[in-house]
Image 1 (cartoon, rainbow, N blue to C red):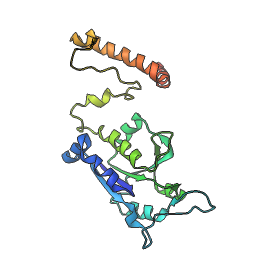
Image 2: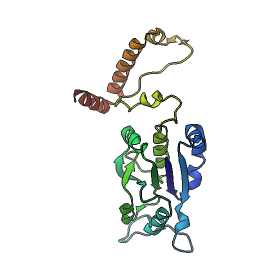
Image 3: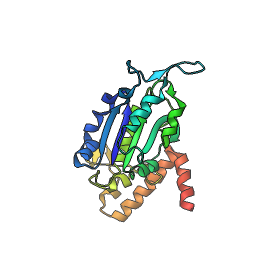
Image 4: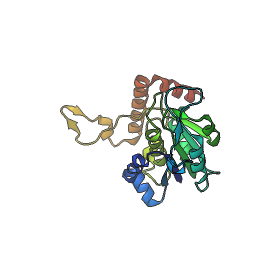
Length: 230
């Protein structure tokens, strides 16, 4: 997979993906992440990428020309899935991460300032939001999306089951996890996890995931019940 990120702040993004799982995924060749400063594609000598909104209003609006010029400079941009990070986008979910992870080439635009010139939207395929709140820019949102989908690429995680058991993968929150020591300050690991009886362990984990989801995310629990009925 190739991921091209268009941003005004490449230094925010590049260091993050040199480490941990995503860093190793790039070293293995499972994914290539390229970060591009679209300010370099500005149409004036001052390298400006924003301007005041027509009709008046607060803030500055991202101009269409530098974005489109940067987009068209990317090899394979016609076939790539082009993503706009915006609080107006569709909510990002684990299922969408799974879908995106199957693409060969993604281009992600990080917004900034007050918003986009509306015409920018005509050049992108999908708009994504990571939540009902506003950030100062799209970089953090883009990094969250990239982190979530790269780990789903086959071969990125050493244990493929790791992401299958993640919260939201089965429409439930993940079951409780324990490791050594067996007892800490009187708090003991559940006996079933020490039994070696894998069927009973799986039953316990499913029950705990259901209880946790019902208590913490009743909305997810209801969706799970409806999905189970179908």
